[in-house]
Length: 381
Image 1 (cartoon, helix red, strand yellow):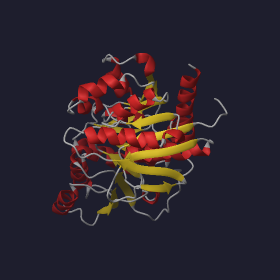
Image 2 (cartoon, rainbow, N blue to C red):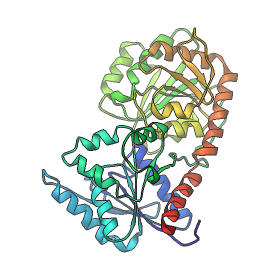
Image 3 (cartoon, rainbow, N blue to C red):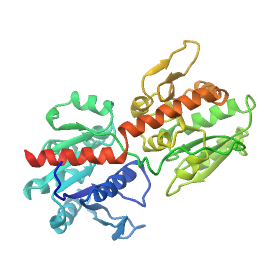
Image 4 (cartoon, one colour):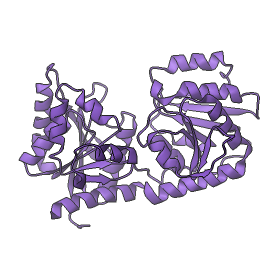
């Protein structure tokens, strides 16, 4: 890797203190890039709730992209104008997502002889983009980027089936600050605790989780549940918990800047989503040494690893780094949770494997290094 200072601009739709997996990944990389001695700038869309300019983690954050016209001409102009004003502060652009801003960013970078890359944020990104008014044009322009970054095998497989240049594809996983998210011994008198962190929306499958908890209640010792996050289904989920007699067990924490204190209180992390990329919340939970249970979809399957114990009489599957269950199957989830509550040795094994996986593949130091290597490789070509 070169010792020269790189000047990098991260382009995203929203940025911290907005909360989400993409926002956190962007922040993780921005912090690590600067720790590695590089210059980093963040550009995102304007949000009424946040300042148009501020420094976060001593990194300049510009929320300058706006758009009003139905045909998005002003939005495209805003991207160009923002990049032009910041042009002296960067030589490399990393776009988080194949979105409306990606195409003008690629064209700008090509015109001003800067290197430009973009990340595919989910398997559905291409379909979402193609459904936009100028989606097909955005996709064609995306091929002019110097590189595309993917972080799950599912996305990689999708690109293999399309006509995207394979020489431009690089696999770089999502990251975790493993020094911040680390295992901590819990007090022995604390109740057995499950936790979930994420948006309270349909795709996260929380109705399945709550139903599984209702089946679990009365079959084992006392437990409590921490649900960290907010969303459109909060009221409906609270009502479901009340109707199923779980009001005293389930605690809706709301949206928080950090979920770390709640991971430290928990024994098992549950992610019952019906679709996922590579979920940052699960990465963080695994880094904290939590035993993880997830639905068998997308990046969750990749994170929890190979099957190590298959039993046809069980509706769930024990893997190297956690337990998988069929999405939407509350009975299977309930049985998996019960197994973990009753088998501390299994929990210890799975949590240790999970932590080791994150240290090996997903530390932010290693992930940021992969990005820097990719940029330096392009510089040499």
